[in-house]
Length: 635
Image 1 (cartoon, rainbow, N blue to C red):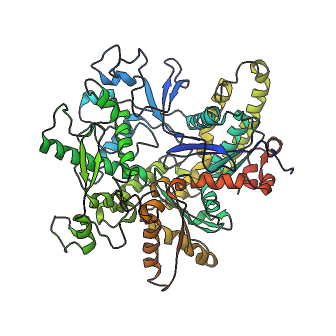
Image 2: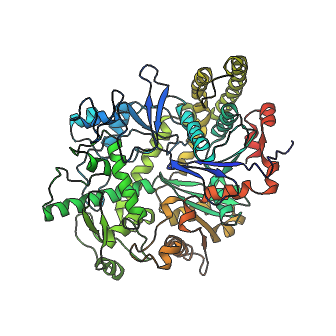
Image 3: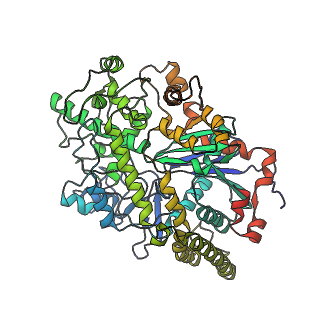
């Protein structure tokens, strides 16, 4: 196989489409040029539902404008300013990734999804839940963890139910890459190789589908799929270690040995930044309600803090769901990133939940560390409407204890229910013959063979029709209706090919805390690998960018982000010392500014190496071997 070289003047493009944000830039750079949210709003054609007419990445701070009119100065719809839902009429929220299955999901019926989410009783956090309208999921990825019910039938009628079409996740995936190409990079994908960062637990059929989409739609000269855990190791200068990735929709622990992912040791937890944002939103509502009753605040009829768009509105009417909830979660996210909403307590901190039994009787007195934080000065935070609330230090630390489990049964119950929900999602798309364990391998091979046959047939169709469309059809991926219909037709076979992998990945889901996940992941690997994997941990992900104190910006813990790595190191060593005394664990992690883009940074380093040219999957190799070449060249 001939190596591909783009030359020094044309570096490759490094892209990563994550569950929270999409990052794109050139290899060798220290930060991505294009950084935008993966959750987008789409507007479909009224006659053809599979045709998307508009997309918007900025819908958190302002309404989008409905189908039938424009917006007034007070952010209401021109047709009826008293109905706030008209401001986003026809718009839906989408995301290419689903938290359980990754880059593949089917359209669940709106009734079943609403029933599942409303019937599941999520344990209440330390504060009361808000009385704001928060309906069922609109997005297979971003709203699966929302369990608050709708308050009134009027609000329920305004709830916009998103039911994705079969195979539409790849349309969103390609449009995210196109948006990065067109905005910040300003480069033609057909002239620049693409280094794509993917999830470490992606099954082979999804990887083949991604390679097929990249070559067929973008016509790139070369591509390569790099595992995110391996790239995270490269970012800190290592090839062996156990990667702890605290993402938006969950936490993934992946052992990497000599640059290769040990798939048998991967463990996943559905607890991530999304759940922490929800927890912050709950206690901000409780603090706002208390402040409102104490100060007798007026000009509002709501018992929850209002997002920015609602404050700007003349009548303070909420938008339809899920735009209203996502806007409120964005305020909670800003509070967390500011350091006021969440913090990392020192080792030995025990939340009050662990000191109170189920009937409310205290079992023991709070320890000294809890009492020390309880009497510490509260952290002030100003809400979008100007109301200033005081956040206790213990509330900030209770948010992070969702990852460490030092709050008794509260976080354990949340993790258990989240894991069960993810298992149900995987089981719902797994055929019965795969569950029994018989025939799964043959079905997998037959499905992959069908995908290869469909690829060749689609290339023949595209070759015959490309001549007539070459003059004016380069409007982006998904513009060819024949290709789009073929992709939809083959999506059922793709799901069938992935079903055995999804069935086996149910065992990867766990409700354990991060230290327990780290140890259990290493112990699943070979015995001769455990020593190096136990001694080297790599912490990355946007959910790990937390500090101890929000007020001391000049402290070392806040400045260098050492609070989270030190807490993990001490917790892991306390577990290992039970059977191996004096063992030392080194937790490597970039600074707070690079930790959220750690995987992309490692891929940028990988793409800038001169020896990397031999690893590209060229267009000629794809034409000769098909998408299955990814299993040989991208292990």
